[in-house]
Length: 302
Image (cartoon, rainbow, N blue to C red; front, side, top):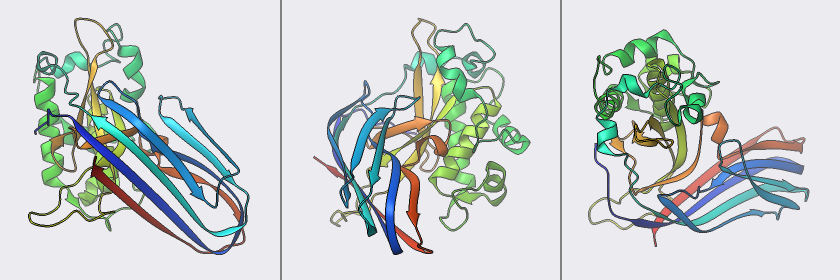
C-alpha cells in the first residue's frame, strides 16, 4: 500500500439525472453529496442545485456528522437533475506508525471498552443491515489476523487478499447483494469490496466504517482528462486506538485498489454501510412505470 503525503485540491461535480415516462408531481429527496469538513479535508465551497428548482432545500448533520441534503420539488416534471459542486483540499491523514505497530487484538472496542475513544468506535464494530456477520467472512479474515500481528500489517494483508481474490465486475452484483453472495461469487464493485472488508474486520472485533466519496483518477499516459469519467467510490476506515489518550485515529484503506486512501480521495460521508450514506434516495408521486438514471462525476485539480 502507499499513501500520498502532499496536499491536493479538487473541484468535484456530481450530476444525477432521472427521466420518467410520466409526470412526477412531487419529489422528496435525501442526499449525501457535500464533502465533510475534517482535520485533513477543508471544504472551500459547495452547492447543491436541482432542475426543476426545489421549493424547499436544507443542509443538516446526520447522526454521524455527515452533511445531509433534503429537498422537495413540487413543480410537475418528467426529468430531474441534481447537481452538487464542491471545492476541497485534502492532506494526508495516516495514523501514527507506532499506533499501527501495536497488536491488532488491542484495537477491539467491545473487548476493551475502557480504551480512550472506544465508546465512539463501538457502533462500527457491530453488524449492520448490509454487513451481516457471516461465518464465511470470519473464516476468510482469520488468515490475516494471526496472534499478535501488528494492526497496520494485518489490515494491509487483508486488503491485498481481497483485491487479489475478487474481480471488479459491475455485472456480478446489485445494490442489494449480501456479503455471503459477494464472497461466494468473488466479484463485485467498490461497494461490495467495502462491505466484505467490513464484515471481515468486524468479525475480528475491530471497528470499521464504510466511507463514501470520490477518487480522482489519472488519465492514461499521453491522454487528456475525460470530463465525467470519475465515479462515486467507497472504501473503509479502521479504528486505531492511541495509548496516549484521545479518541484515536482511523486507517482508511481501499480494497478495490489495494492502497491506503490518500490525497486523491475526497470523503463525503461515513456510516455503518452503504445504507447510511447513499448519495441519493427518496420518494416520488407519479403514475410513471419506467425511469432511467444517469450519473456523471468529475474530479478535477484546481
